[in-house]
Length: 129
Image (cartoon, rainbow, N blue to C red; front, top):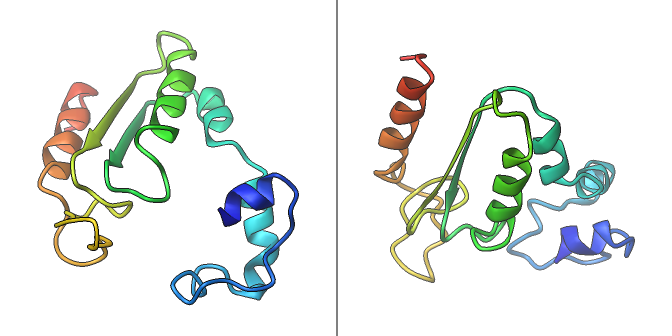
């Protein structure tokens, strides 16, 4: 909601919940305002290089049902030569860690077991491995 508010011009919040206070300290105000002004899908559409989007279904920052399809559509509008792949890992967090359930933020532990095969497949597909 904070980024959506910034993007809508609501300004930087005067108070932030304790769980998000570390991400949104007052000294990062200008960074977050600039960040919110950018649309990742627009940036993705302008990118000419190969792109792999790995997302987690349990990500609460980049939503698998809203943001990932927008990125995929933007990447698909690029030239045919600009390769891309999009994969959503079930029960993975924003940091691509396995999530045990709704109360687990997915900050700790090893990477989700689907990260390595997805990354290796992408590297092989592009002859980089």
